[in-house]
Structures are given as C-alpha cells and as structure tokens.
Image (cartoon, rainbow, N blue to C red; front, side, top):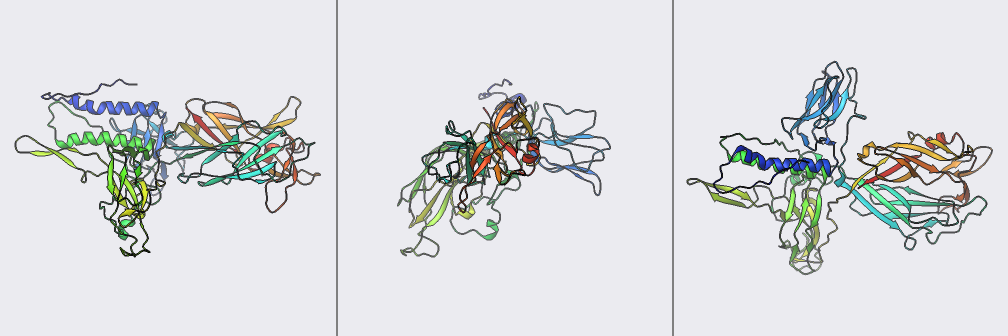
Length: 597
C-alpha cells in the first residue's frame, strides 16, 4: 500500500507543478491499491484478442481492450494495433505508454521476460505457427463485482412434485433479471431419509428463467423400492445459481434522447438504440504532467479532470458493472399527477456515477390516453412510460460562472446532477438510460402506483467463479476398497480460470446421463449415480470423488409410463471398464462453483 496525503489550497498560494501533480497522484495510487487488494484482479478484463494474419504479409493484430497489471494499474488500448513478428519465438504483452493508462502491445524476444508487475501477457507466437498460442499464458482477470449470485430453497411443504417417492422432480423458477443461463448447484439441507443408502440431486434443463431438480433416493437391494406417487418431498434442498455478467462491450454509444417530449421516435433514432446488450467506446486518456513556470491554459486543467474521471469510470465499468446501487425509489398513488424520486446512487454502462442528492417531485407526462383515444373517450387506454435516470452531458448541465482578470469571465463549475426523464419503452437505451419505474398515464394522472420491476440492481458479491469440465474429456479413475472392490470414481479439476488467491469453498454438481443398459447376460437398465464431494482442494485445483453405493431405486419420472424399479450402481458395472463408460457414452462431467471471501 502506498501512503498519500490529502491536498489543500489557500488563497494567494503560489501554485507549483508538484501541487497540480498531487491532485491526480492520490487518486491514481488509491485506485491501483483498490484494484490489487480488493478485486485481486490481474490480466485481461475485456478485448485484447491477438490474431495472426498471413496475407498479404505476416502480421499480428490486437483488438482494443482493457487490462489490469499485477500492480493494480489499468491499461487501455483504444484502437486496433498491428505488429510485425520476426523469425523467432515472441511473447505478446500489453505495456503502458509512459506512465499510462494508455498502452500498446509489444513483442518480446525469446530471451526477454515480461515484467511481472507492469506487463500483461496476451499470448506467444512461434515462427512457423498459424495461430497465437494463449493457453496457459493469457490470464483472464476476474470481475467479482459483476457476478450474480442467487440462493434458494426447495421446501418440503411448498414444492410441486412429480414422480415417485424414490425418484421425483420439481421445477424452480428464477428471477426475471438474470443476465444469462446460470451454473446451478443443489444439495441436501440436512440428512437424507433414514431408509435410504444414497440421495442424489441432478439439475436439468437450466436456463435464465428456471431449472428442474431430479432427486433420486437409493435403498438397499434387499428392500422393495417405493413406487407410489410422491405427494410430499422427503428432504429440503438448497440451491445456488451463479451468472458471470460479461463486461460492457467495446463499441459506439447510442445517442441520448435530449427532448422530454413523449412523441414517437423517428426511424433513424430508433435504429441507434441498443435494445439488447449495451456497448460503449474506450476513452483516450493520459496521466497529466506539469512543469515549473508552465503557462496554464483551461484545457490543461480540464485534461486533469478528464483523466481522473476516465480512470474511475474504467474501474466501475470493468470491475463493478452497471445498475442501481441504492435508493432512487419512485413512489406515487393512483390518480396523482406526479411521482416522488428519492436520493440514491447508480452506475451506467460507461461507468459514470449517477448521484441524485435530493428528493425530486416530477410531473407525469401530460397525455390523456393512448394515441388513438380522445380526451373524453372512456375506452381510451393509458399510455406506458419509463422513468429513467441518465448522465447529464456537459452541454446540458447547469453552468456556474465567475469573473476573471480584466473583463473576462467563464465557467468554473458544472452541476453533476443526473437527468430524470420520461421515455417510451422503445426509446430506452439499455445501460445508458437506467430504468427506475414503469407508469401508466391517463388524463395526466397515474392509473396505478409506479412499477419498479424493470429496475436493474448493481450487485456486489464476494469473489465467486464457476466452471464446467468438458464432457468426453473429463478424466476419471477408480476408487477402490482395500480389498480391491470398486467403490467410486475420482477426477481432478483445474480451477485456474477462477483466479482464486486462497482455497475457496466449492459446490459441485455431477452432469451427464445416469441410465445405462446392464452388461450381458443381464437384461434391462440400471442407474449409475452418486453425490460428488471434494476430497481435497488447493488454490488452482480440486479433487472430486463420486461414491457409488449399490442398491435399488426407481426409474425417472415419466407421466406416460408407470415407474419401475431399477438397480442402482450394480456390481456388474463397477469394474475396470467404468471410467470409459462414464467418460464416454454417459458423458459424465462436473460443474463447480467456488466462493472465496
């Protein structure tokens, strides 16, 4: 950690270059310390993809992007950059220009090592290679603040089940604001039923809206399976869903809607909106420098302000995401001509801070009903509007001026208040216009209280990462008793992609088919299944064991066919061919979630 002092000024103080440099220095140092110690972040944050072109000449290009060094500094490449590799093995690194944060790619020869604290390795290229090697070289930095983490419980009392008492399923609905399909892990909350020898939980058909839990209990082989229809869950199940929200992509930002009028948008305006995922350009920013006896212009000081703001916005954009952090609630009653907006804080897709410092009373749009309705038409339907909060551009902000030397005067301060605005749904720029509430207006009043369901919260979570091993490429080995009998399977998983700094807590899920034909001369099907557990773990890996207890269970729930009893982990399948079976036709693999405080 680097010690920094607070800066103070007095009237009549001679201003030195060191005083101006000190305005920027504390922010720069504290931001680097924050990235390094709070985010444990090092490597590529977004973009910076190296690619080799062989025609018309052999060149290496790197796309724009952002990275974080081991020292915590942010590096920015704003434009595509092309290099010409030589005839030797070269390492591609991103390195700051001067003191940064502007950066450019460099090629390091076979005898030159990357600087561990200041260089970010992007890949390696051999003289005869046709692609850039990145495996094991290119570090993808984690963005803990942008992970969505949800937990829930499937309760015995409220679950809607189908199947039998030994094998049943239930569907779990997820909140509507998930950014993508999550990795879901489920486990028992408490002991399994006393009459079972094993209980396994499989997650099926996960998407951004729901997933299905398949619960299978095994009983000893000398007991009859319970095939009667299930009416009540015999266990409680807790689940965790993790979604890694991708950073805002690099691209043009949509134009702001400057008018507060509620008329329909022209076609060319609608085409500029990002209705799916937002994109934003990268800022071109350099650390400012000053010298003694320099004649200061207004642009020099504005560059200082711009650099400070750009670095902070890059940090927010890449490491925290965008959304409403706290407050900014909207209230109003049916029949009211206005709404009340409370103070609060939010970040937009560029990383700009939207700080509403006071309570605001805002009139609803002055409309009578839908566009076809007449003012006195009882069949007129209310119009829908979204109340949004957005960044106030410099040319829109309230300007505070002051007299200067002689007869001069000029702007010395711009109000930092964000803009509250009513927009039709199709005019909202995702990521740039933060939705606070949806309202319906008729006769210039609300028809109901504002609906906050379209708000996007800014989630802050611990360091969470998830991964899935590849079906068909997950290597399984046998776990045997002292007498040589097969009792389970073991696999080792590489978790370096999680970027952990210690040994995290892991949650596991076994994926793949469970049903398989019995080997000849036996006939019929059997079930191979077990509950995975962590045998050992380290910072970059963990060893997973699947115990396989033999017994009897029921077939999968199928409304069209009655349930039948099947063998669970029969001895005829627990042999030396088992790793090839589960790794091949059954496609067993492991999904994991690691949580590090």
